[in-house]
Length: 142
Image (cartoon, rainbow, N blue to C red; front, side):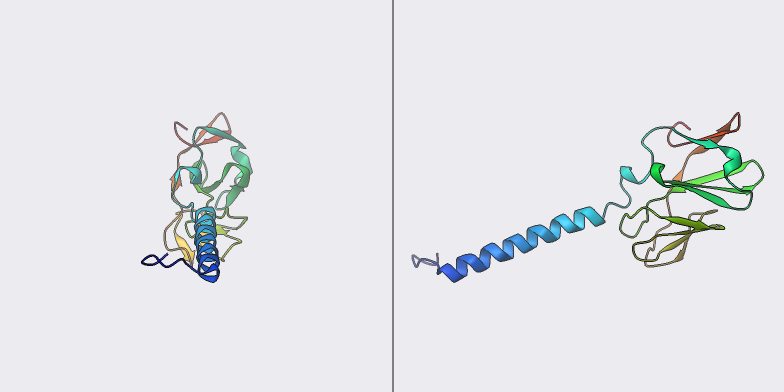
């Protein structure tokens, strides 16, 4: 209503449609933009399995645990979040030491977490990892 003049039915409907579109866009952004939060790495220690599963000079993806672990040299392990820093998709493959995101094609170096190919601009966050008795554990207090 403007200065005592009732709004037309068309104006009311147009406003409702616009409000719904803005709300839907906000929900979509929330679903895609989770990178960088606490959900991008394990909240507590996670047992991954045998250290021998990670090849020397290569890497292994633990997709369900959202972690990628590399072994640059015999007995040396590095771990990174498997959540793409572009828009929060979980990476889906490792080829040698290159980790790939299926959503927009970002690629990362599994030895350093660095971006190899965008659109991501930030490296994968490091995750603590340790090997005890031949078993790998990743996450806080690992």
